[in-house]
Amino acid sequence: MGETFDEILKYSPHRIDYVELDPALIKVASQSGLLSPHEQVRIIPTDGRRYIAETDKRYSAIILDLSEPDTFQINRFYTKEFFGKVKGILRKDGILSFSLIANPNYLSEVRLKKLSSIFNTVKKYFDNVLLIPGEEIYFLASDGKLATDIPRKLRRRSIATSYIDGFYYGNVTEERIRSINESMNPHEPMNTDFQPRVINIMFAEWFKKYGTSPHWFIATLIGTLVFYLFLIKKEEYVLFSTGFAVMGVEMLILFCFQVIYGYVYLKVGAIISCFLLGLLPGALLGDKWKKRGKRMLIKAEAGMLLLLMMYLIWVTFSQSTIPESVFFLFGFTFSLLCGLQFPVAAEIIGEERSPAAGLFAADLVGAGAGTLAVGTLLIPLLGIQAAIISLFLIKAASTIVILKA
Image 1 (tube, rainbow, N blue to C red):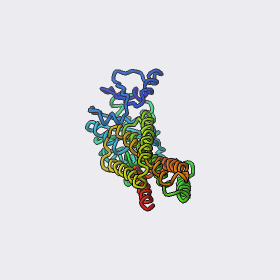
Image 2 (cartoon, rainbow, N blue to C red):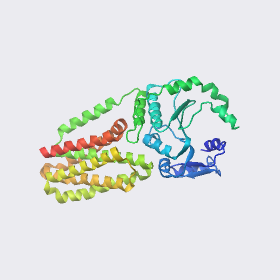
Image 3 (cartoon, one colour):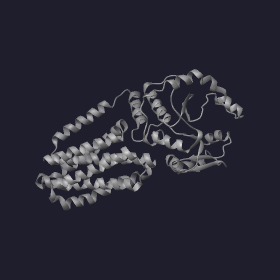
Image 4 (cartoon, helix red, strand yellow):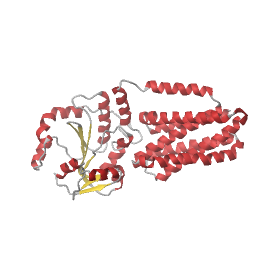
């Protein structure tokens, strides 16, 4: 923190706005001397992405001082939607800068995909994007002209540096700059909020790093579930699909909430509570209407399918910021429909056949499978739209099972 400010202050800026999500981090850094007060520095304790979406200020330069985009929390700062917002608050010929870990002497296939995806994403909004190979790969993006001879520009302004002035020319040659920029693949898909291409690439990098593959895990999961489905009753399959869908939707809401607001860890308890709270009134309503049998199950199925369709429409065509309460209400309503189905399905099976254990087991198995499938496979590998469509198809299949029962 402090070292970054000290370097920026060499340029005598009019103002530095430092945006940090975690207020506790700001407090600890100030107490330990890592964040000493400066007259030009204004500390803003909020989510950086929310800030650039709401501010009316314009900046000459924006620096992303973040770690690698290997989590959904960080990836949201390297997407098409984010770079579009950054472009909106930069002055004419303003510059965006960030860096990514990579060895410029050798780029693996996976690392090249990652760099190319982010390069193409930034390129969508800026006329000039320049990669400079140093200890990391530094991205510079601007609509104005970008120069590579940075030490000469620093000397003109009498700005003293140690690394750049002493080692830049030896490490950052014209040949290396040209090589890294020409190696970017223009056909690599862009990284977006709801199609997190970089997370997909990071997964591939992790598996390659440890010499393994997700295929065995996926095959084992599918094989186990298929075997289980052959053993259960039709009514139990309905609860299996419902548990799958409910936990899948919970993963979707957590993901989208984090993309929009950033502070998912402060709200995760509220989101989970809304899902749990919906089960009780759902079960009470189901117990009241259980005599309606199959018709009630179909209505609950239709309600879930409608909610999933609404979610898909929002993700596909809008992606606008919506109030937090909408996420909470969506989760509550979806889980209410889940709770409603349990007593209705038990009534259809009949008390004499002891339905509770089978239905409860089916719901739990479905919930576990939904969490794994959506949270660790569908969203990272295929994107949020594919995850919603998968949940929709699973619930559509259970609706067909009810209709044919």
